[in-house]
Image (cartoon, rainbow, N blue to C red):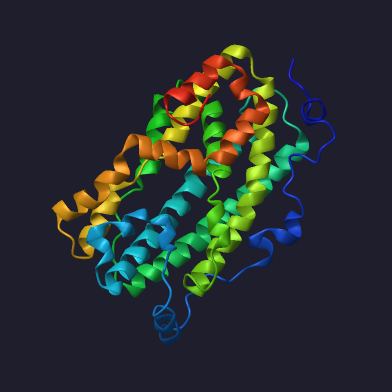
Length: 323
């Protein structure tokens, strides 16, 4: 029997986005995605970057550390544009598709009305995130005269391939699990960046996005708990395997794009491949995910995913968790 929300989470305030009408960026932080005037922007660029270098580990490669600052600056601009382009597609085609499974009853079992209402609010948030990501990426691309951004983000391609391989019966579940993983992987370190580190308007966009995502993460963690506890054992076994595969997709480095980015700043193809190679190490990728997906694993543990040894084994063999 499918449990009710009260059965699953007791009397805790679940399935809401809190004071959404007053706190959501789409409601109270409009028009913050414009770059400053050119003279002001160039002054900022003397001491700031387009994207936090700490989230670009390849900048520490010996072939890059000794290069001119303008090269590093262009690489951070490339990374920001790619991140924002990826975000635009992710929010529209991935996360909101996941949310639709809640809103339109595609998942098995009863869905509380408050969960549907919060899901519609989240859907609205993601549309706005896509908008300001698109607008900011366009401005940065225009600043550097980058006319075409033709490479589809690798992670997007891998996620759609994953859905295509999933049996039709389980696609709604797979979509929901993708949303759960995407929205609970939060780069907490980004909350520590300041306007002294990166361009002020970029900081504002990243900050307001992360403030929304913190609420989305709680919603998906609670939603996952609810749905997991309603699944039969065989569906839980399948869901655990799907979750492991999804987490690994999120650990992938977008090496085709990164190769192009490096070559656009003067590195040879050989040099670019040399810089990228250490990032492709599978054990290193798993270690990165152990850190960035820590909130995801906490939510899974809370729901009881790892109580089953077979479920736990999937993640242990992939190097994502310990015993």
